[in-house]
Image (cartoon, rainbow, N blue to C red):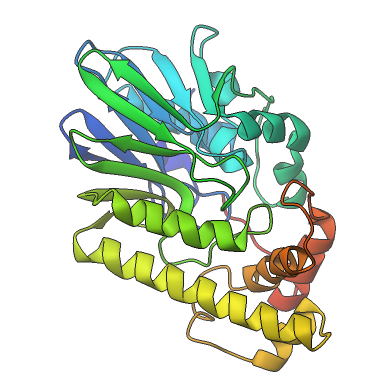
Length: 314
């Protein structure tokens, strides 16, 4: 029997129509490995998914939900970046499905493999296979689903080095991937602090009516501005903390401990602050963005700041 949404831990995911024949698949509570995806149906019935999700059960539940609005097999899956909660379901797609992503996304899917499932060990991931994008682009790519236009844009290194935003200009719907965590601290250890700030301004420039974040609730109207402003404020705080700590010769952990609580401490995944500082220090040292941080060390510091193992309820 295929898992249903009722079989999943936590609050049941919801398929929400955000424009005609455009849906967001929203998975509460948006914490580690519990992400949002998208469903776009073209005027000719072509089906495109924005991302997959983390566990086999969650991916099968996603496909069962998609089947309630389209009987087509996905022609495309767009991966907004390489992390496992956005790519681990690629393998469940038919061989005819084209997996699309940025050039660096493909490279990182291959390099990371199933690492996320080995770091976040709480869930039952079921069967997993690595399936990277087979169609890649460098700056922008436009897909035509009949008369429906789907634009893919790379903002530069931000959340990761291979991010994609998916823009539906006729509907003013923007799928941001993990450039937006609504209610949680962003995770920038594999991206760029300066690049992330620039990406937030790019998101603002679309003037979207609906923003589907990678994690957290849907955003409309004034909530879009509020969340983007909050993320800019967080990143500015992070940059200032990094600059002062780095100049004083403090480790990222010492900088966080000595700074104490901030208004961002109540956001989900507050342990990400020390991981983000490691990336900020890396940039202040003048090291290339293409040089990866040792994620095991980043994770150990985040666990220390968290006060123990980091729970994952996917």
